[in-house]
Length: 422
Image (cartoon, rainbow, N blue to C red; front, side):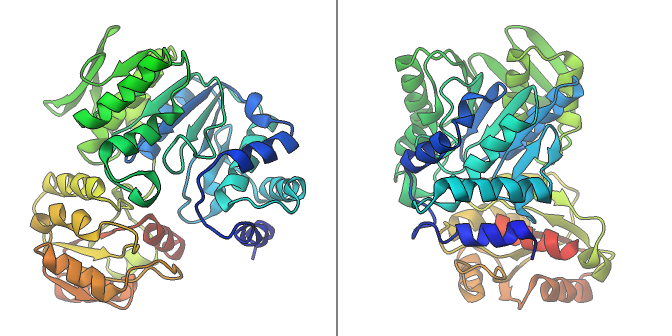
């Protein structure tokens, strides 16, 4: 176990709840650390239900193509915690992470604080100690009471598409959830709004109006679509004719639109905008696995990995599969017991030959494989239980060696796969 792993494990015990949404504890620790949130390079703050990470990755690719150095904070991590904190383009080192975590533990003292709150404080502290031109902050959950929502004057805020998820924390209706996401909007700070349902858009625009925040909304101030195998983007500054995003899936068109709007607002060139859509990398979002032990165990299988886990994520994956060449398609699926499992699966039924239900190793909130299987059957799929991802893949390869296989249903499952596939 690395030194940082031991500290991170101990941090899990600092609060009786994994999630307890409030900003009080975060502000207390930040004050003890000297308020690093007030000393960050210009901040772009990103909230939304789906697309936050992909949008952030495209913005970072565009900024870095112009020679800028960029801090980035995201969650959850996939294989290793270090992935959450990128300092001037590079994932934080073990030594730097260990020192920061130690410092935050000492400054926190005996006070209760959640894992996400104290690690967010560590990231913000890290960002003040390495020079950079920009800071990209991805919201962890919601927005209004998320630990990242401590920057009073960001350069820009972004709200990607909002849909139903995390109802136990954010509210039952789309309007209630959108209001939580809109909590990142700051007085006088421009907000970029991705495609939204009418109920969500009305709430977001109303908050922006109350705060005098200039709105840059999809369908009003910017437009993006696919045309003849190209991405066409237009705003008041003119038209961009670009290659399609290298991140697979038609949903990446709208994520690219939000990223391009941000880049144009920040003064990016056309070359930077092209780099944003052609050079971004974001793992476990319809990621093709091309090497590693899992690939070697089924060399003829076309193996993919995706961490989407809510109904909107299921729709996005289904649309991506529908655009691929016809091929027998198997899902290896493991999900958390807090998710709308059937809602995730219904869009995928028409694209799936057989679903292989697995449990997520080491995850206490994993849904039992039998329940995942039953949910798939109720969603109109053929489904069976497998003991593990590796076992399911071996079974598929034995019966359909040229199949397309998508491992899906949870970022936690995706992280396990990336660690094991090395």
